[in-house]
Amino acid sequence: KDSSGVICDDYATNDCRFKVYHKENGGVASARQYGILVAKGDYSIHVDSDDWIHCDMLKILCEKAVSTNADIVVCDFTNVGKKCWEVKQNIVDSSSETLLIGILKGLYFGSLWNKLIRHSLYSQYNVHFFEGINYCEDVLVEAQLLKHNLKVSYVPKVLYYYNKLN
Image (cartoon, rainbow, N blue to C red; front, side, top):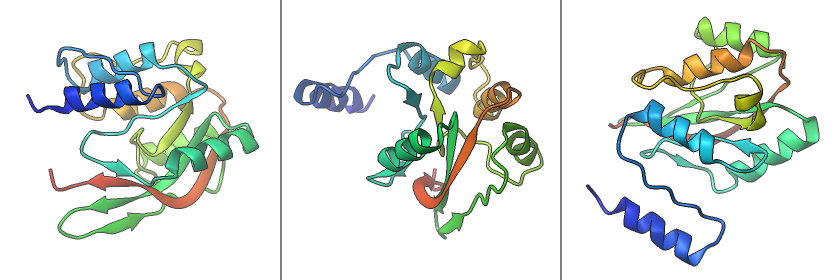
């Protein structure tokens, strides 16, 4: 209903790195699943529309992924609201099992937006979002991924800004 589609089309017209897909609103899980299906490249990430990222976030996470051959790279984030506070993930063990257990115990945040993921894992392990599940849908996807023996790396730096005002 806003002009975000037109703004995105303008970016794509002026910069060949941008690809725009228009899809009828089917909820966040449907949109993310569609994004997985059309995404190209070695890694992907999900950024919520009302949040923002550090200008070098993708570069920093990609460099870490390549240098450590990681399947998933996690970074810290800031909650932005009436009060702002940094959330440090402090991941000390790089096993996917440890990360999954930590997410389920509430030690680590279970979102996807602070995690760069090797894109081929979605098809390799038949990982997908379930349409209609629009709350904690990312935790469900992470559990599907992390049950496999994946290499996880951590960047101890705030690179994502989570908007808690909405």
